Image (cartoon, rainbow, N blue to C red; front, top):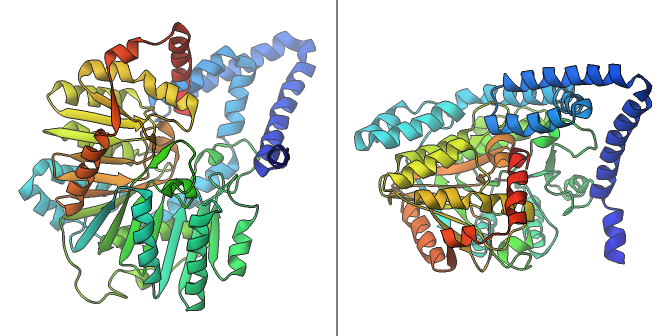
Amino acid sequence: MKKVIKVLLSRLMVVGLLMAVQIAVLIILILRLSELFFYFYALFGLISVCVVFYIAGQRSNPSHKLAWTIPILIFPVFGGLLYILFRTSGANKRFRKRIEDSHQRTMPLLGSCGGLIEELGREDKSIANQSCYIANASGFMPYKNSTTQYFPSGENFFIGFMEELKNAKHFIFIEFFIIRQGLMWEAVLKLLEEKVKEGVDVRVMYDDAGCLMSLPYKYDQQLRLKGIKCQVFNPFTPIMEIRMNHRDHRKIVVIDGHTAFTGGINLADEYINLEEKYGHWKDAAIMVKGEAVWNMTVMFLQLWGYLSKTQEDYEAFRPHVYHPEPFESDGYVQPYADSPTDNEPVGENTYLNMIGRAKDYVYIFTPYLVIDNEMVTTLMLAAKSGVDVRIVTPHIPDKWYVFVVTQSYYPVLIEAGVRVFEYTPGFMHSKAFVSDDVLATVGSINLDYRSLYFHFECGVWLYKTKSVLQVKEDFLKTFDECREITLVDCRNVSAFKRLLRGFLRLFAPLM
């Protein structure tokens, strides 16, 4: 009973109720005007048709356009009006402008990569082109004078993460989608409080929607009382607007400008298997040391500056400020970010480049497989061209409806030669690619529309680093714990489930 009351009084329930009230008021208003039904139906029908024309002319993904167009045409009285209310708020325009202004101010600080791109080109022109795309599209350059270490589980990451936190002397930047009160976060928080007392500049940034059910309301104020600077991304409100559709899904830690982490892991007990939610939680992270950390420092400060409405002296946080000695070098490292405000799906295109240019194999970890036609075509083309393409998804899902859509892609991919595996011990949450023993990427970017088009994301592109083979080794071990899906499995599905898959696929871009 206590759990039921807690849920009913939760912030999520209150916000959901307020949003439902807004929709109900809109419906009642229209129904009250039903005496002039014909005229209003014609008016709103015309509005919906105009909205459909507007959507068709946008630069967004065709699947996303279709996902909006179908319900608008089915419900012309409400569909077009809801889209207008949701899409055209002044808050959304201000949000996008301020984000872009923050990015544009800092782009010159990222420098030029011409020399390294040319060097890469002498080794492999295809690889150089991939790095060049990331640099041109996101502004984040490749680096040498950097090393990386791959963590194949949340438990491994947590040990390395805590060790590096203990070594922090000057500043700690922490940015996560989810922070959940529990043993993991309490251990981190205790250490952060100690560091504050030592005079370390500690900053924490989290996504409000991601933490809606995991942190108390106004938790940022509690952290500030402890001396920890804190910002909350996109505070969740019951107002219907597209700004709320953009979440900070990144996971970034920067320590003293020369050490950084990213990956799929959030600061919550299930990520290190202290709490079992969906069987064994399989995740991954990457640690970067050296000059490449600068990219991740800039990523953090860009969003911090937007939220705090302050302008930092970025030069004070460069890698060599607190590490004057030369850094060790191991291959090429290129941390990159993806923003939904720039109309450039950097994360997806980075993945497409890796798949389309693979020569021997490409292995993929993803918790969700909700992909557009371009991704499906690229995966099929690679497999039909003789590339060993393997995808690992969860066997125990966290969202049943997303899992239904994920499984709906299996038949067409398997028919083309793609091998699909489900991680039988539990939930696969890692987001990692590896290809041809030389190329890999590890980060926060899922293979779904939300990650690829709507969220703020990040990753680390790796070429000829020791960590590339560490990523491959993790895949080879994981395959042994998986069940390979066959066409027989795909065909042994009830008629109801087939219909459900088809219906949910229509709305996949909105999931």
